[in-house]
Image (spheres, rainbow, N blue to C red):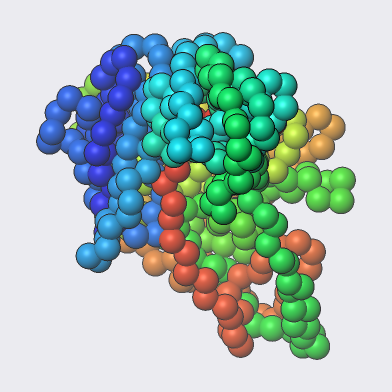
Length: 433
C-alpha cells in the first residue's frame, strides 16, 4: 500500500475528508482536528474519491506526504479556495514587500512568507533584474553606475488570485565607485519549463492474419467507465479503461462474490426487501472489486443517457449517495424502464451499481447528443457465476477495425501495468505578466 498522510492544515476553519460506505455511512479519512485520522492506506494501482468538507469560507493550505516500501516523499502543499462560484470571486491575500541594500546586494522580503512569485528589482522605472522568491525572500546584486539611485522591489505573484502584488518603499543609494554584478546574480525566471525534445513513436506493427481466435476481455477489478465520444461524425459508446477504449461487445464485466451487501432497514427499498442480499459495485472504490463509472470527458456537449432494457435474473439499480449519504436513484429496472439521466459534458463520475441476484445480465444503454445517438449492450456477470463461458466467442472472426481495442487475442497480447495518482488541489489562474 501507499500511505498518504496529512501533515499540516492552515486556514480559517476545520477540514474533514470522508468517503461513503456501501450504503452512505461516513468513513472518515483525514481530519484537521482529530489525530486518529491523519493517514490513508491506499492500495497500489487504485483510484479513489472522497468528500472534502471545510467549516469556513476562505483560503486553506493542506500539506501531505506519501510513503511506501521504506521510501518517503517530500511534503507537498496544496492550496484550496472555499467560496464563490468562479475564480474571479477569490480575493487575493494582501502582501507587503520591503527592500534592503547591503554589501552591494539587494534583498527583498515579502510577507506572508509563503507567497509564491518573484521580485522585479527597479531603479526608478528601469528594471535591474528579477529573482524568484525562496522562503519569502529574493536577492539580486545589480551593476549600478556612479550616481544616485532610487531602488524598489515589486512583488509579482505567481497566481493573481492567490496573493496580491505589492511594492516596497524606495531605498535611496548613492554610488561613488562602479559596482560590478555578482556572478550569482539572478535573471528573470521562466514562467514555464522548457519543452523537452520529442521522439517519434515507432510505427505500429501490422498483421496479415485474416482471422484470429478471440475472446471477450473480462474486467473484474479495474477502474473502468461507460463512456461516450464522437468518431468520424458518429457517436460511439464504449467501455473505457484508462486511455483504452473497448467496444461494449468486446468485454464482460464481472462483479465478484465479495461485492455482496445487505439491504439496510430503511431508505433503500428500491434495492429489495430490507435484509436481503445485493451484489454492488460501490461508488467509492474497494480493492479487488471492479469500479464502474460514467464519462463524458471526450465530448463537447451534454449527453442524455438511458437504460432501456435489462435481461437477467434480478433487478438492477444505479444510484449515487448525496453529500451526507442519502440515495439518489439514476436507473431502477424494478419500477420499469426506460430511465433517463442527463450528463453534462466533461463529466467523470461514479455511483453504486446494485444487482438483485447472482447470474448473467445484459444492460442496454442509449447515449444521445443532439441528433447523434448510439445504442449498445453490456454483459455483466454477478457473484459466483463463472464469467468465462460468457466471454468465450464461438468460431473465428475478423478483429474489430477502427479506433477500438479488441478483446484478448489468443495468439499474443500486451500487458500494461499502471499505478495511480491521487490529485488534490484547486484550479488557479496562472499570471501571465
